[in-house]
Image 1 (cartoon, protein in one colour):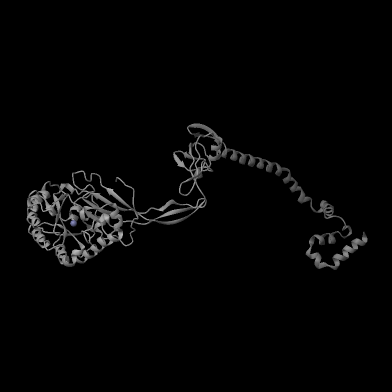
Image 2 (cartoon, protein in one colour; image 1 turned 90 degrees about the vertical axis):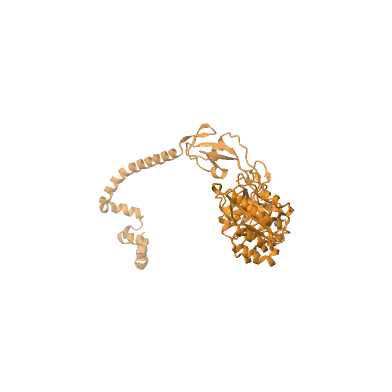
Length: 475
Ligand SMILES: [Zn+2]
């Protein structure tokens, strides 16, 4: 033992640097060299009576009360936490399909559905185009919570708080696995016939006028690619497209103001000068519907007509029945005529008089915005039949109603009967208190006609044109 002690003592003495690094070894070697084989604990006990009495006494006092306090605190905390948990998950009352039920608060609608024997039909697993792939493999249910209809995904894992009124409904379908992309959604052509149109015995059932009230804008839509079926289907609309809207209606001047429009088709011709003279002599405004291919000779007449305050309309390039044409032909018949007329009239011409009065939604769709208003008539002179001056006058005056549009011709053949009839027609209407205005002025006199888009000029370059006609609407 003595040898080992010495050995230890020598060891420490020989390696002071090591001892310094480790105070726990240094301490017993210095303070108790004779009993260095004792454990550290034994050494501490040996010192206790002299060196630590004052330190131990207060520690004992603390230890004697602290455990009780801590235990009480822990118990209280435990009770509090337990109470809180219990409070959070206490039984609460709800109404399920009209029946009172008690459920644990914070349980889910999914758990509730599983515990109730609710008779609803689950949805199906469907392809991206809506074909049923597996019956009943869709969502189990939908729910209406306090009047708000919610999907399975919205409600299944949602907690119940108590007090809710829940009604379970049939499950919704679940789409096959799919990828999606967002693509452009083209606008549609919306064709609206205003209420009351064609009810007054007018020959044209589609309205005396048709006009654009809104140009189109492209929207955005999701396209879904089914990974099971390989089908491509439509997803949700990300951004609504703005449809092109064409309205058809008759003209009813506000306050039944006695206004009438007279229109001359198939010009310009050398007769047109006579019409301009008669109109001027009778202080009447009119509207001339010009044929594009006659502008090479008749252009200056159109310019003179425009300068006299009359309105210029397009009557197509070569008097084609527009409903028989494709888009390319319409681009020529409408677009080229408008461009040529603008040269002579000095401003864009977007009003047309369709040859034979024949126009439909497909013509509008194929027009690509080359026109913004189409004008029919309420009085057909039938002057092309050359029925005699009296008959022409009678056809044009047989009834008089504010908003009437008279159809005559200043081209297309011998117009001598018209030249005799025209002053009499004007006089008859004027005697009845009417004023002759242009078609556009007549439309503007009816505040139910929104001319803002027509007046703003041709279709804006950034507007989008529809690719199809929207389903019929009664608006
Ligand atoms: Zn014609």
